Image 1: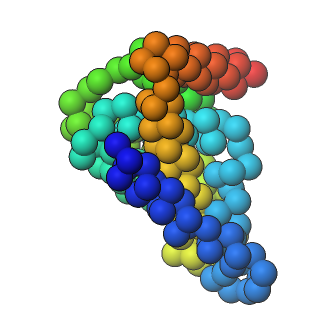
Image 2: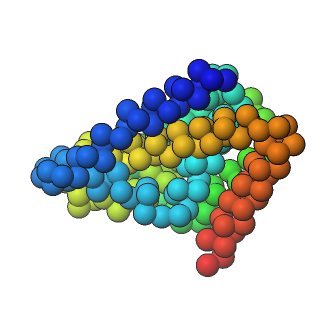
Amino acid sequence: MNRYLTGGIAALMALAPVAAMAHTGTGGTLAATHGFLHPLSGLDHVLAMIAVGVFAAQLGGRALWAVPVAFVLAMVAGGALGYAGMTLPMVEPGIALSVIVMGVAVAAGLRLPMGAAMALVAVFAVFHGHAHGAEGAGAGSFAGYAVGFVAATALLHGAGIVLSLLLDRMSGSAALNSKRLMGSAGALAGAAILIG
């Protein structure tokens, strides 16, 4: 488990230079900065993406990286649709539902087969990506903008993975209860977002 924790921290640190790009403010850098900030600006995005990281960590093994990668790839596809101005029905409800479902998955300790877990997060990722792409349609190049929102998403997934691995170091019942509480709070927040 220590190698996963070390790897997660290293991945988070590797992404830190993306935030430094905000200082130049021109061309692709401006688009990347705008893309980086968008996922961090909404509680719904933050909660869902951290929950994906926790979910991947609770599955363990290859799912630790495969589930977040599936999310990111589907999110980029959804982002391209939104950036191009293509409509996708139920984007905001889909995002809120992702917070609810991922919160329940964490709270219940859901252990899906890796392919099913990847498909589940990929469906929700399309909605998140579409929202990111639609928001950034005037931000400049899609490639630069996508680099930004992919980096922020990976950072949030990494935070969820590290959080889960740290919780796993606690005594068995404390870790389980903490994850149940965290997942339940996320699901309730998602329900409030969906209703509100």
